[in-house]
Length: 316
Image (cartoon, rainbow, N blue to C red; front, side):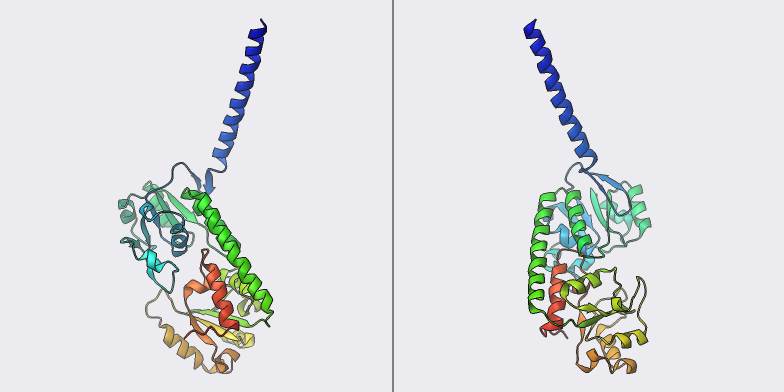
């Protein structure tokens, strides 16, 4: 009888442990194994994807540091453009490079098990791909350094390389720390920077360029004027900012936009001739990858901007 009693107690204990383990496993599956993308779509992570397509340069920059090339079937066309990308050499090795607005049938024909799609891309394309049964993860836009870190973490989980993602974040944090130490130790008088696209001055306080300026130890003139998202500064406001440094674009969606002509026109624009940046010859063309990088390479943008402002790291 005693032996039977012991057996019952032992069996109950085993069942309790097993049930507890099962519940923990279920809890893990329902939280850590589910990632919600920018559209609110829940992605349940099962197996590591081995046919990945990325349609965004910053996603490429992260992805190429997370997975082996053999797991990537296509990357973004812009990743081979030195004005846009920090991974040009490696990206050039891929034979299949796609623009964002690629025909859905072409993507389907590549038989991807994961497509990384930028939040700023056309939503109808996402819907069409999902209707075709394609697994699409819409990656959030990066509005500041913290959101870039969150992006790296999410992508690393989605591709099944969370540990590698942690390593990238550790290295990024170390570089950010070293950059801050260098900038703080110099204790330089802040200079006012004003960035332009071909459409005009930009840089609202909630945007990535503003956060790059903050980390680089410069003042974002557009934010000082209270610029809001989607707005551009008027010529009168540009004159009021009177920036120490002006940064002009090297890239545009429209091929007819010529950066060198844009720079000449800016310098010779009558209202701008008395700007401090024009008078001191501090008007530069700055590659897009430094102005708005949405990956861990954003640290390079911070360092570049600081050197331009304070160490005569002159561009053309």
